[in-house]
Image (cartoon, rainbow, N blue to C red; front, side, top):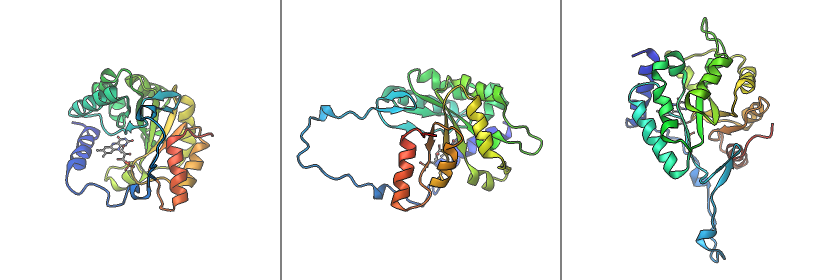
Length: 243
Ligand SMILES: Cc1cc2nc3c(=O)[nH]c(=O)nc-3n(C[C@H](O)[C@H](O)[C@H](O)COP(=O)(O)O)c2cc1C
């Protein structure tokens, strides 16, 4: 097993172990649904379908990118894909770096498209691979296209995982030039690019800077608590950026 493969396996093991959940609130307690005592409509009138990056989705939900790149990920992604197909959810894969380095691992990602032929599928690459890391060259246009083609992706997520790279012993810590590198990736990608934070959150300032790169959407939890910011960021998650 390569270094990347064993790390991907450890991520899943860690996520299943006790105490791996964030102690910070996901802010659901700030969401209050006002009761409507006289609704004046039939339940069947309710339509939760939504437009997501140019596609009509039956439900406004997506399974976020999490895994791929080691043997057991095949079954996890197959199960998630089957659920996405049945329920009409969008679905992301984990970082495709492992398969770009070793094509023998491609099936652990492409299984998502195989089992969710009708779903909105989102590929995934890491921001750190868009800039050089020491002697390791950044991804080029061919690799970006390959990531999309590998899974028949409808969109490509660039995951923004600065905290993870800093904490991980073997993390890729050179993050200079990222803004321009993301803009270049947007130009190369044959499908819309989504900027995806991985749990630490995103401030409105960062989201505004990212919009200038041409990304088509964001996926992040708000980084700070003020209600205004939450509203703003949630809107960014739901609506394509105008920039
Ligand atoms: C086991 C595990 C592996 C993950 N791997 C990836 C990954 O490869 N690429 C990615 O973009 N996000 C990855 N994530 C991050 C999730 O997609 C998501 O952004 C994160 O759990 C934060 O979600 P929240 O902001 O809703 O709390 C991973 C999360 C977990 C738990």
